[in-house]
Image (cartoon, rainbow, N blue to C red; front, top):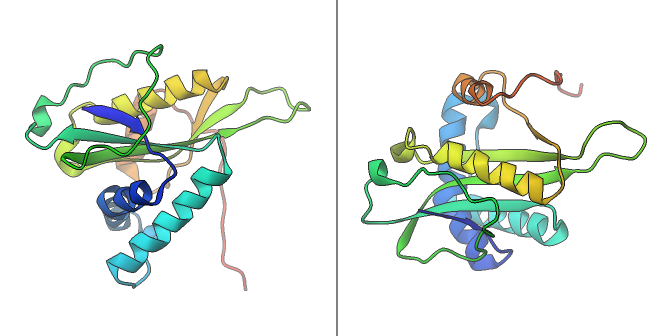
Length: 190
């Protein structure tokens, strides 16, 4: 198993969108009504997400996308879920095509203006583990990667948003010490 920072290249963004982003959003749409994808062919959705993700990664050096790849011969139960070495730099680049992409986490830095008394925060944007690898410790490894990234970026806190009706995700985060911080309210424009 390897956690690798995805580079801002077209092949990397397209592979991420096809193998991780689309399954993640299909899974999320099944759990959360507000996450239904547009009724468009998969290739159009993948192309749009790849272009969007490339723009984000190219424009913002504090935005990162980490992917987990595994040897295609390794069974999900045999994935190494040991601790990350915070001193070891994460590799950057497109994983070998012979390795399966099975999980990802996106992060970005929320810098605090000097007028406020709070630390900078590393924001976890999305986290996904393929269903066959759930329960193997990969999600914990990804959160560990986010913590290592937070320390490397000089951030004193981790922050994330979770949909109120995504009970599985809420339980996962609460077990890891996350506490409610804000309440977001939305409504449609009339």
